[in-house]
Length: 220
Image (cartoon, rainbow, N blue to C red; front, side):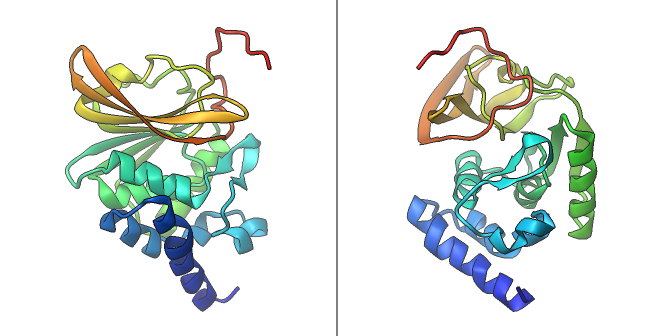
């Protein structure tokens, strides 16, 4: 594909996939039109960069389909002064989009290879307001900070409270909870020190975070 084709494909992605899925936030749409998604996709899948599908990454991870990423960005709506925590860095694309909206993004991945790849991809785009860390954040990430936005980009088989206390009052937490074949995307807003409000956004299905805790036995 030539660069011009990528530009057209990016435009079509927004108009044909993302707008029809009720993503109308102009900031989000502008970012999706301009951040070169194709540069974050593994070479062998570059022709599928704008397809309506999860794209495989190393270590069993995936790059989320564009409309899911768009709905995440619209739901949490980071503001230019806000701090974001992203769990599951992957190739760095979602971190790049969040970084264009927020003051700073801290992104954590369990895979050193993914952290290194994301660092390379973000540097190539000149994005310098992302701090990348490698670690197991499936049960939460307590680094002593509170974040205005937390996005967990892998699913959790069960809801747990590991991320709630890292959220600032007024902050928004995006989670996908459940098991195949249907999982639920949730937006959790911290109302006060002891209160959270939960909104169901949509149904989807994607791989679980590595080491995500499971206490129940699931049967079909």
